[in-house]
Length: 264
Image (cartoon, rainbow, N blue to C red; front, top):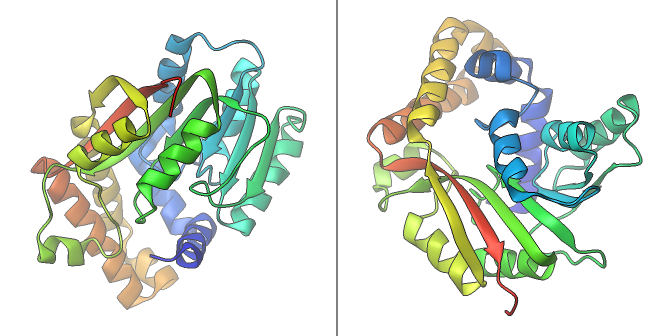
């Protein structure tokens, strides 16, 4: 999937009222406008374990509308930089930065997180649900390793394939690309990250998808009105297959905590 298509898809997602309705139903009280199954509570729990210094620098890789970045700055006083491919979504994040009076702590820019450099290293790189579009993993992890302080941390929220999906399953989930578990472990090690924690949250993810799919059944007419019959049907079909893959444990929701080793 091209970078242009990724940016366009997320732009449409952000503008879609029905997608926000589905996400709000799936998250319930944990919904803060995020476009993934992650919650702010999960992010906070991991970050609090790291003992980051005051004014720690954090990169939110694939930040979307800045939902998590803004709250991290507000709650902890961290300096948070967000990077995303979509100019329109970054504009939303920038606007909210001023609305929340966080312009001294939050900065958002348009770019490709798999190919960037920074003159000011980060204490933590956070990537939530953004490694599904065939990004070059080796290059991405090397860039992130170079962009981190010593010590430095990488936190990933991922949906990973336990095994190679069938052609039928791949077709059903459209252009989503679930990386194999062994591949992600290999690439992290090759980039000189040390895996410190590996959490399997597939049951949580399945429950989230069940609520999403239930909301789709309740709002099917609205989905077709907003998206059109063909596109709406594809979206419904795709999410039901996400649920099937999670229930069968062929795709697992994994949260990883990784520490930068000194030499690359």
